[in-house]
Length: 542
Image 1 (spheres, rainbow, N blue to C red):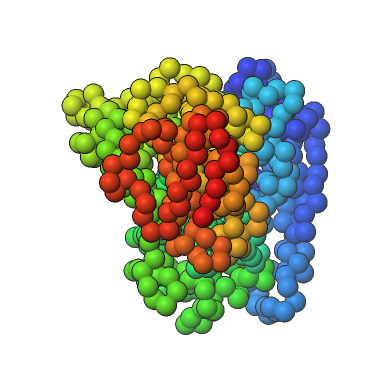
Image 2: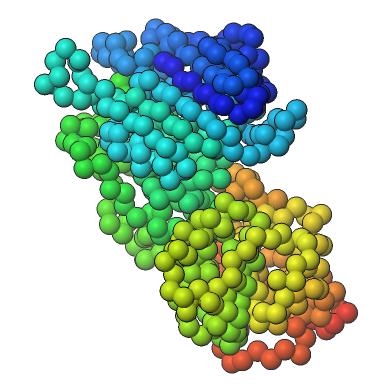
């Protein structure tokens, strides 16, 4: 199987630096099922192409299977795995271009950090859903997609098309993002994996998709397929993806509509799709049903199941609860001007604009990509003029003084501070609480104590989190801020307030000393008031 990556960046041979593979050499990398080779069919100043060739040995592939799942069929030896791009190629790509996927290039850091012109070609790609699905998955990522269905047999056109496509992607994309997108989407398009889908696949998905998956319109389909339709893993991934930005977990868990051309009856089970592909192939589904927690191919979670908690009670998605808690607090404060510091893709900004009582709304983010998503979500190009007059959307860093941050009744830092390096927190505090000085500041952040309730989670909830605080650590930080800048703080739980580990999200409402809190602004169930006088950092908790 073959994958080629071409660029016309000047000089094009810099592709070798980005991939950490020298254009003048053919390099081999052993895999458990064959050999991967990297070579450069062309390498000039104008155009450079790197090719990843994977030679799959069917015998070695069979021998790498778990002996506890024997397969005596001929299909384990005779199949498309040596010829068609699949999870085998995705795994080889992850291994061979491991450093390139991180975006690190010490010799050319600026080139590695930005988009470059790329053309990626996969001559034969299994695509359950046809060319249309390939376009659905890659076009939202900024690619111009050329997906051509391959006939079953060119000598017999009446037989129709096969499930394979020839895929060509063109666009200006950061190389690390392109590699991570391929790593995730190749097995998604194939809808099969050659290995057992274990809980650590959630971490792999989050790491590879951190810069693009949460905002993808088909993130639900991608997550379900990548995790082999395993319900428990999908739920964990949905919760983790919801923490990346301000996308709603409920949206991620909405049952995904597969391609209408797919025939569920023909798909049968995952074992039929991936004969000879690993210990999970025959175990993921079989016969007329599937093991507990596994979705057979073509089947989706029953309506409402993904939103049901213990005992059958309805479970509200955490991001919905967090958004509602912030909106209710702002309304209770009587704020009419609000700035969302770290607005991400603009969900809070959109919700504020829907409420006429907020006469002036601003959203700021350090990421131009996030602001582009926000502009699309808000439909700026079609927004009515009267609403547009209430909105300001701009790029800025929260650790640098910016006069545009000042002059608002309230500021919101919703799931933002944990993305700031601890040494830079002092700068953020000075900018927000010392210089901008809104009447109130709302801060939400994950409660690290609650992480034990997330199945399969190891470490922090998202790779970009620089830290996650316990409730005591959050309150200690708030007391420090209050003492230095003359605010008081009150704490409220967001989500189910677990008696042992607390809520999944913790929220602090800061108010300038002397500022009046209207009735209903706070003080809800589970809230805790911390009175801190200006200059006194010794605020206590209950």
